[in-house]
Amino acid sequence: MEYFPLLELPEEIQMLVVERVARYSFQDLYGLKASSKSMKALVERRGVYHFYDVLFVPWGLNMPSSLLKSCYAEGNPSTLYIKGVQFFFSFGLKEEDFLS
Image 1 (spheres, rainbow, N blue to C red):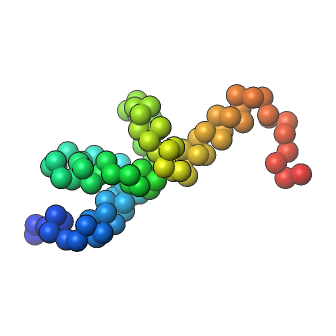
Image 2 (cartoon, rainbow, N blue to C red; image 1 turned 120 degrees about the horizontal axis):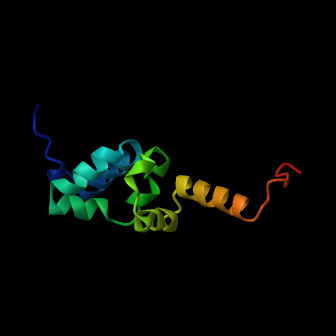
């Protein structure tokens, strides 16, 4: 397999690659993060967690709450969904009708 020089690309393209990896693969994102200091810095930049889909993370891994908080702060759709479901059931709104 040929080496792909991601760090030689412009920063905007690097961020696009990291965002796509965050969207589609939990394992690849952490592999990218562990590969080098510069990749770790790219993965931990603001905005990447917006694309991270926590619904596809195996829940048996005990996802750190700091990761969920970072995703929620970025307006991540899957964490907003989880928070909404938690809010719905914690306040006993089971009889509420959202359509009316």
